[in-house]
Length: 186
Image (tube, rainbow, N blue to C red; front, side):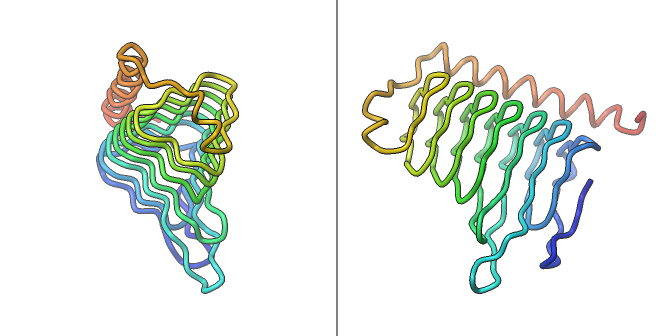
């Protein structure tokens, strides 16, 4: 469902993107080329700052927002999801937040008021809040990262971990093509 927000903004969705009919996109949302947005995802840009303004939620080209993901912004803050990035099932990305290119965010993870650098991997059930994860970092499952001191214990992404992230992005890129092909059948 594509909805206008109270400020009058309506999502802008590139014609090559696929948005599942059960997903809800509301307000100042920009979806770029070849994006896959899965069932029951909610992407909502509707809160304004003290001046009545808001930054958009931007989903970069070739990214995938999987089943049940919630992306929202607090008090007019924005969210930018880079290109080729995967946000896995039931994750929450709450702005202000920036997620770089070719990033993998694992199942049930929560990102809030943070930046995650290009090529990083945040595995399942992790929380990243109030810090900047440099490019190419690997955050293991069930981690809680709340400061630069927490990042001191984090390792770099290995080629195997990067390969997994790329395979998820590629699989979802193929889903865009498949669902676009059969979209008139449901």
